[in-house]
Length: 446
Ligand code: PEP
Ligand code: CO
Image 1: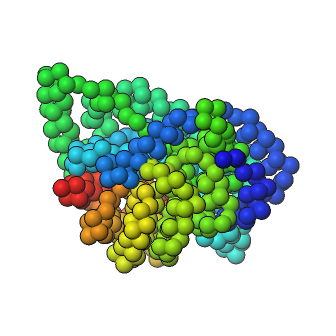
Image 2: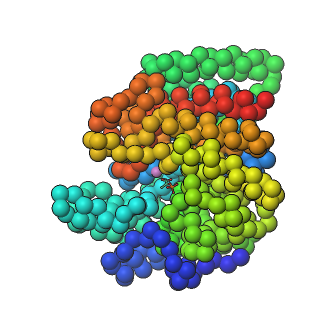
Image 3: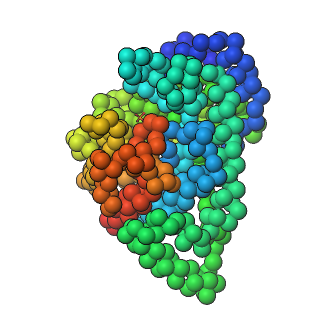
C-alpha cells in the first residue's frame, strides 16, 4: 500500500471540507504537519486492532466515548482527568457486571473537526460559515472567528499531543489502578443514587482484590489499563499529512490517532474519506445510518477490509431508537451470511437528536437506552455478538441530555449547557447507562 497524495484524494471528491480562504497559509500548515512526529505508533494501532479482533469474535466489548467535539479552551488537566475517570468507571461497571473484557477507546485527542448539516448558520438575519470544530474555525458567531484558519490544524495537532500525553501519564502513572476505583467517583457522583450503587460495587471488588492478594493471585492487569485514542477522520489535509510509512512494516498508518472512523456524511464508497482509510493499516470504523443498505455494508467490507482481518473494521450503527429494530436485522443477517468479519457497535446518540422549543439540541436518555436495548435484542435474536457502544459523554456535571435518574427536564437544560456541538451524557447519566448496559451484556453472554 502507498500513501494517497492529497491531490489524488481531492480528485475523488470529498464531502464536508472547509473552504479555506488562504491557500498559501493552508500549504504552510500542511508542510508543518508533515514534519511533526507521530502522535501514536503503528505497534499501538496493531495492539488495538487485535483487541478489536476479540470484539469481532464475541469475546470482548468495546466502550468508545468522549466529547462530540473537543475544544482548545476545554483542554485542561481537570477536564481530561474527568473524562478518563468516567470512562474507567463505566468500564469497570461493564467488566464486573457482565464478566466480559472491555476494550477502552477514547473519543479523545483528535476529535476537533465536525461535519455539519448546513454550510452556513443564520442568526438575526446574519449568515456566516457554520462552526466546523476548533480544527477549522471558532465557535463565536462573528465573521472573523468563523473564517476557516489553517493554523488551527497545527493547533489541533498540539492539542491532541497534550491530551494524549496527559492521558498516558494518568493511566500509566498508577491512576488506572483498580485500587483507585473509589477515587474515580467524584463528589457530585458519589452523592447520587447511581454513585452509591457504584460505591457498593467497588466495595465488592475491593473484597475480591483482597482475596486475590491473599492467595497470591495478583496480576499486572489490575494496575494498568490499555487505552487508545480515536476521532473522525474528516479534514483531508490533516489526516493525509499525518499518514506515514511505518519503518517496521513499510505500511501506511494514520498516526493522528489509533482508531479512525468515517462519519455518516462522508461514507461515500468511491470518494476521498473511504479511500484514505482503505489505504492505512489502523483499525477503522464506518458510521452506518438508517438508510444504509446491506449491499453498501458488504461493499465497505470489501473495500476497507479485503483480507477480512478481524478487528480491522467496525460498523458503528446509529439508526435512532425508532428504527433500529427494523433496519439492523437485515444488515447483520446479510453481512454475517457473507462471512464478513466485523465488530458491531451501537452509537445510540446520533440517531436520537432533536431540538427543544427553547432552541437546545438535546437527546432523551430514554431514547438512548431504547436504541441500546434494540441493538441487544436484534443481536440476541440473530445469535450475533453486540460488540460495543459508542457514546458522547463528558466528565462534567453538564445539563445537555434530558432524563436519567436525576430526571433532568427541558427547563433544566439551560443550567449547564456547554457543548459546542451535540449534547453529551453527563457523568451520572453515563454511569447509569453503564449499569443498564452491563445487565444487557450479562444476559447476552449467558
Ligand atoms: C459524530 O460522531 O459526532 C457524528 C457527527 O456522527 P455521525 O457521522 O454518525 O452523524
Ligand atoms: Co456528535
